[in-house]
Length: 625
View 1 (cartoon, rainbow, N blue to C red):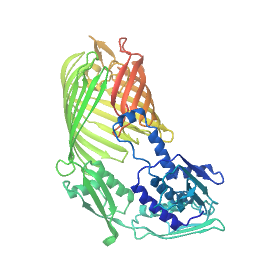
View 2 (cartoon, rainbow, N blue to C red):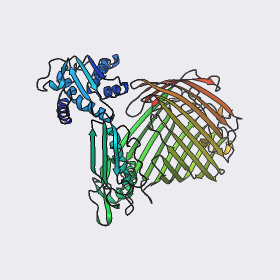
View 3 (tube, helix red, strand yellow):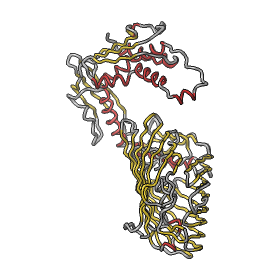
């Protein structure tokens, strides 16, 4: 049985209305078959079938875990299945499956959808069957149509039309759409913001199984950016919204520039939603205004987090943030971080840091943020006890969405007690940081890489020599499988302290290995360059290697296997004269909307203290790296 496009469209529209109002229904079987045995086409049709989706959802519901069923034990049972929904889904199949055939260049196909042996098109939606058990879909795809003509004009310079849009190629409907989109976008990239698809001349010849396709574009004039018109802002001043967006008024229109402007507004953190688009018509001088619609986010936000490990103890952190302090999208944030709560590590006490940072986007340039920062910190570590106050500021240049560079100046005062005695010192440092981040997800990456390189030259003011600290943190991720549920993750950390000898260095610039973030399974900061009176001494060089294999084995539940190794040496740059230690273990992950909950169990493998516990437990939020 063959149906016209008009009748299929009416059936699809009626099906959508029915679907929106009907409860869930049940089916025993859904069968999709394609005449001619085209397995690839059959797979695509099955994936698009609403009846098949309904059956899969039903089976998934029936296969809920015991835990899920226990959680829902007090909820009312689901409503009885309504066959009206099944009928509505079946009537919509004609249009959905026809679009699949068109996408494969099949324009002469026929589709039969039967419920319990009755053709769905013959069943009135006002008199649905009282019961539906089986659905059978039979598709006769017909021949593949090929392009007899495939034209698009005029084209912008250097436009590359998709290879499949050419005479003699299979006339897939998606290829025609791709050709129109590519040609239109090429004109937009050339500054023609109001390019239009003026005419589509597409006809199929069933006798010869060919399609003639000719597309005509109307590029319109080449436009330049006009003024930015802001709507929706309440507390952020309009001139600041314009400055943050940074639309280059007077320059040739560019979609990429418009996307960058929208990203700058989102990055400021002051807005819940951002939309930038061209005005409907161009103005005088071929300038086109940009309409910016923004919705401001809540001005204040409070958050907190926690982690725990068996030896390092607990960690608690909280922050308070004001998103628009002075009406210019300035962001003021205070953080409190308390670590080693209840620690059992030898010679280790509780650490805390209270920090504040004020940032102002679009300072001097739309891609440059200005920063003022300060913190007070107390550290009670195995190798030293220090109280530090530091204040400074700097600038962050957002080179692209993936790359940013920071530079600043910080002044520090510190009191330290370590294996070499007590002392006070002051210094000025000049931090330079380059961060390159291509990860698809900061908290649970499946692909991409992350590299953070910080060089911090410093000069002593009182009781401190000149020198520099170099730290590199590099991570990479490879995801496998259709949904990338299995990921190989690797991390390399490198550190070097140049200038002062170990007794004279800033103690928190020295390196230790062991514990979470370094070598899991080994005691916290248990590897240095030696000991004096049972107090460990840090080193001037550091290397840490970590590898993980992560796999979500069932829904949101995942397992992890990992191995870590760390090195600390007294030399400025790694030369192998120091010592290594390693640890490894397994873990469990449960994926949530704010990142996976992490539980790791680790044990020492090689090196480390002889009296180290054989098992360490780490619990937190987010992947280990």
